[in-house]
Length: 404
Image 1 (cartoon, rainbow, N blue to C red):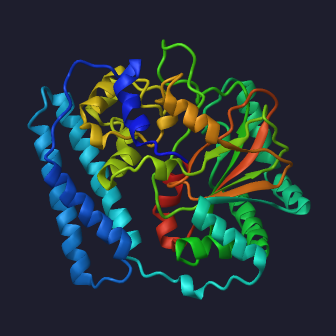
Image 2 (tube, rainbow, N blue to C red; image 1 turned 30 degrees about the horizontal axis):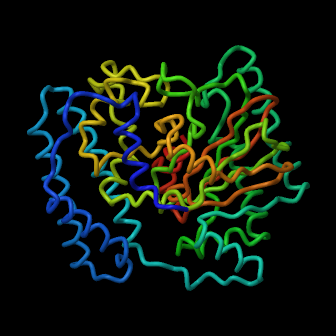
């Protein structure tokens, strides 16, 4: 894919919904470079460095991040801006800890034995394109649908009653989910999926979490976040995931066509935007600012559902960030209709259509993707999470946060 750096940055400068008079905060390049260089070193060499070296790099990252946010806070004009930066800094600090813990965890990829040509090809596709496609046997699809029949019936009852949020139409816990997880681990092991994902991540991974979801055309939570700007962008809901340590899969349990919500992805778009490390970290968590029930920004922003950019006040705060730090991982809603960025992304989109059992395996943090936007009928699918998390770590809720 062509270099998207200028198209991506220029999108916010030229987008009618992001044009505000206030100037952006300023951050010295040398301070930003200190953070980015330390983070990049951890990412590239964390698995082989000694503990003392890693601790020093982590300290440099934390100190540089604190200095960057302190400099921006001094340029704030009111308490709401200060609170925006406080919450953003806390979220970035949490994500930094999670990222460095992942990068410094010793790789176990040498324990993964890729037996057949198909497994080797799938693992190579994961490395090069961040995704590949496959298909479950029909018998396994029927088994999973039978396991989830009661929940799916309840989702349809909810929809008939006008309950159309993702929480109303999906489940990610309980005995049914555990039973489906066992089936998937059995089938993905047989198909070599677990080996391919393990080889990609450098960890011995398996399915540790999933959500059973019903998608319907009347569920419009994914609609355009920024109102009053004409037609919505062709990239609605295109996003990158927050967690870097959770490869994913989407598995269709019904036939999916262009009209019944195919999953789409944009190979190469993540790399073509050339995000710097702090910019990427900010983008992965900025949408959480103002979401907590006790946050004074919750009522101030008055976000609709989980879309941050539908709040003009949130967009004003976002645009105060230095241009080199602006990024929203759920950027599909932010793309200006008719822009070069929209054209570039739309032309590169790869949609997954196919019969029940069709699946994609992908790195959700590094492959721009989006779920199905329904036009008619219904789509039943599984959103699947792979990881090497222990049962204790799963119990602490990391998987649930990824599936939200």
